[in-house]
Image 1 (cartoon, one colour):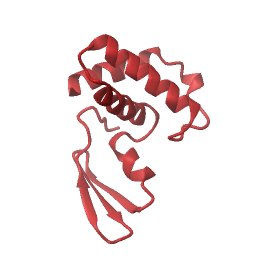
Image 2 (cartoon, helix red, strand yellow):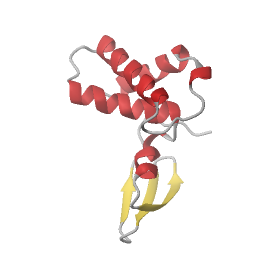
Image 3 (cartoon, helix red, strand yellow):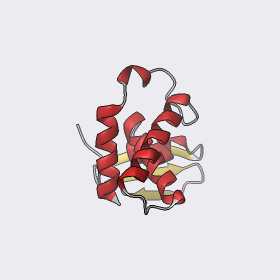
Length: 113
């Protein structure tokens, strides 16, 4: 599934108009919805056997990577998370308001600069 996700991600980077990806890029923005729809369509074309739930998950993850901070986006959207530390490109730690700590592993398509 990571190969499919990487392929669709790269395809969208080349196809999307960067001028349309400015302004409000929040989780509920029209720009994000357009990226999710384009990603979902590209996943369907690339592999018609992927079920709807998996297509939607992949489309959301791809939109997170195209428009935001990739695998960190769900943590940044979570109002109970008060701190996110990235220790290495392969490991991040988040702290919630209830003082619990969760470890996350970024996706394989995450890039570092």
